[in-house]
Image (cartoon, rainbow, N blue to C red; front, side, top):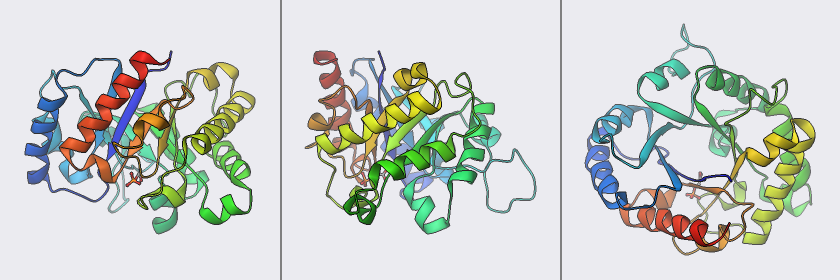
Amino acid sequence: MRTVLIVGNWKMNKTASGAAPFIRELSERLRGLPSHVELVVAPPFTALQAVRTALDPSSRLQLGAQDMFWEDQGAYTGEVSAPMLVDLGCRYVILGHSERRTLFGEQNDGIQKKIRAALKHRLHPILCIGESLQQRERGTTDDVLTQQLRESLSGFTAEALDGITVAYEPVWAIGTGTSATAEQAVAAHQTIRQVLATTISPAIADSTRILYGGSVTPDNIESLLASNQVDGALIGGACLQVDSFVTIASAASAARSIGA
Ligand code: PGA
């Protein structure tokens, strides 16, 4: 069975000095949570060290990053590499987020190189894919998801992709307050699993966690996780407050202990 994964993407929020007390309070509030849910926070690069220091070894939280470059080191001004993230204690890295695609011109071939570099250094990639509103209205959602997956995962063996996570994040739902319905999320997740089965392997399709992201809140997490097609959530705005992140984590824990 796939373990539920809840990831908080802080985006460009919180300074290093603000992050430390936030993490201490969050860790404390999550202490009693059953261990069948995996929890990750992805602060900005500048706060990774502060968050790592604030996490005591018994904390339920693991560390992730929001992006990285594909080379290990060298003349790449402004970039951060997989070995640098691993050295700071990161276990996960979000790759191909739609804000990176639309604001910074990221494309599937570059994302593919980043996935390769992350896997080489044993960082778990969280590959984000999703359609725009226009693409959904045109009825091309499945084609868009298929192409993003095929191009980002081309050239990998099934063994290499063991441990990858996919996040389905419809662009129109990110930061808008309008989440996909549970039915829309389940349909997209089924498409993603089907593409994984045909392009990689049925075993990878079965073992890969597929998260939903886009305006997840304490109010909609339960319905989104009602289907065991949805293996967790990638959370933006609602992870910036201790209360809402704790409520979401608790709801995820409750959903899976009763359900699948
Ligand atoms: P949101 O962001 O929860 O604020 O919509 C989700 C994301 O971008 O990962």
